[in-house]
Length: 135
Image 1 (tube, one colour):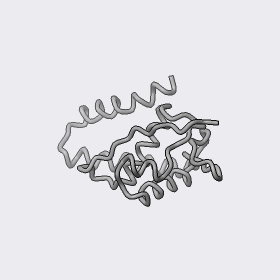
Image 2: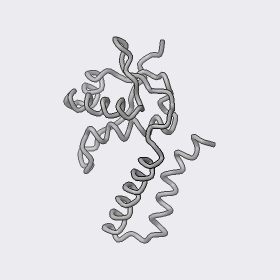
Image 3: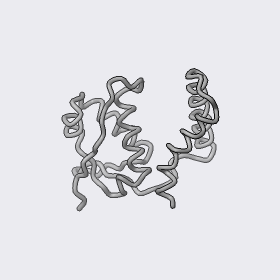
């Protein structure tokens, strides 16, 4: 049986993303980079809420979203575990989500008055984390 794996995430109070979104993003990233492997057990809702000193409902909602998207699986009476990798969205939905993400990124870069070549360099550096996993 898998042991509960610590979830080393931090909530940034100055972050524009809601706390629940920060949790979802952090768990997704840890799964995508291999820091959390399939079968790893996550802390309970109450345990993570205590660790982060936040409301358990916020953790429960984040976990529910991750479960609905297929990142986590609930095992009755045992807890939440990282799910085996699978295609989470159809090709059309993946394309739509990618377009949305690219547009959001471009709008932020424009608002920051950041040169496109420097923005691409920063993006490549950030995405290199994911490339290491597939290498």
